[in-house]
Image (cartoon, rainbow, N blue to C red; front, side, top):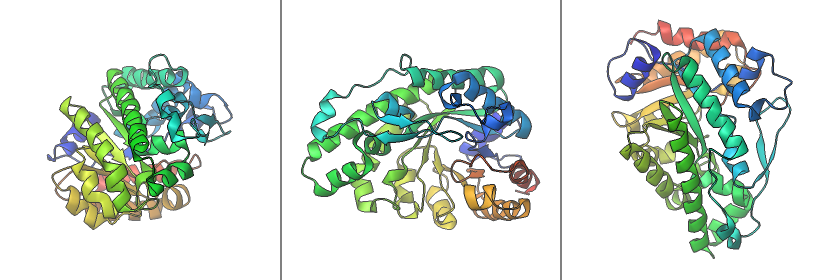
Length: 343
């Protein structure tokens, strides 16, 4: 099998020659093209694509996530973003200071927005170069809840939903964020990506209660996933932290891939997802992948393979983005673990 056949078969719970490997490695890629000191790397479609392609030529992983972090849609919606030297950009200043300003927000056009158009270019260039050899996920950045947190400011938005005084405006903001996420997801697929993905980590149990998740996050993700699924688009859905209490809802959202991290209960996640959605992850990106030994990486990979590969529907990878300092030998260990594992 090649990487595309292997990954599509995995998503369909069919027999594969081995478990496919994803590298959530966009923060590592600058070093493969000598761009560690570039202040423009995360704003350049050419550089982002070149880094992804160079890393793929080095490791030969099956699944590539093309992105520049967690703040691209936020920046396009007016959030002030800080581009930090040597790391991914982060949202710094909200776009609105009151829910009453939601009416002023405008859904950005990904093809004309300066940053989003560069990120689409990155996906397009990767697809043109290696899209017949590797499974390309053009990341649609943030899900509706996470984007709302950035536009309003996380503490402000969490207070808004806790007080419940302007729920009509909260819903209006989430509707707006859904429209932004959906438009960008379509644009990523229009570049030739095999799939798209969102992160919605502020909606997880490490930040808000499962009750609030079901009230203010799940309905909008479910609408997004359903819309994409109805058009034959594969969506991956990520929440950092211990998503175990909401794994049932994450699976029922309709997303084809559920990304879990090291805090999640692997047995519970497997039981919830079996035959319904593929799981991706869940090896600790920091303590194991970045700071562990190759032997420790192998041990954690085998543990995940034992727990999550039976019955199919599993893509091995880190539970979240790999730090820039992750050693190459640890990546090699993850890939070799998948290649050597007997299904």
